[in-house]
Image (cartoon, rainbow, N blue to C red):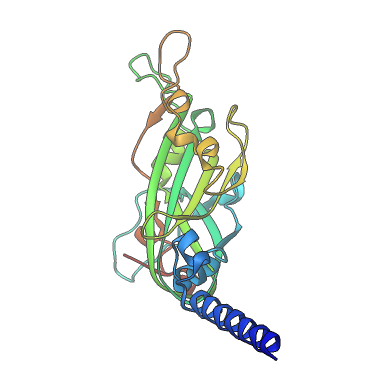
Length: 252
């Protein structure tokens, strides 16, 4: 009888310990939570962040050159240009799964091939034009519902005409604290830069704009191969702002 009592007592103690460990895991205070250092809410947030995905990158080529919509008021001033000039319009589609996402930031990195410029200045006094011109822009969106959305940047006509069209576009979607959610590069002929998707683990070799050997590369005569310029604008600052504007979240 004494032996049976000892067995019963041992089983009871084992069950109590198992219940306590299970309770600690449910509260996020057990060994599993201590090892990862993350609360249950943070783990759940990571799962939702993983569902923020780029579904379609911008097109590179003539299909992205668009004439801006033009509105003429009766009795208003008449246009002075004979031809309607083309903007470069570059749209990325992404999807979110969370019912509401507080904010997301899209980082844009664009490299234009100056050989594609339509109006190259060939005069003797013209400044040297480098092989590539580089633009970057940060767009922060707020109050994002679940579903499909678009992020869009534009190059004004004068930049397309003078410095050419993009041959390389990279997009990164990041959280407010800088966590990379999804990223991708499309490349149409720029040597030495890898195209495709990348993430937090692989971004070190994919973020070409942080590579000094690329951004500050020089030719044999010591001239820069890439010139950094401003000029890329968010769609909200272009004539296309009111076209299908329900597809775009509020910029802040």
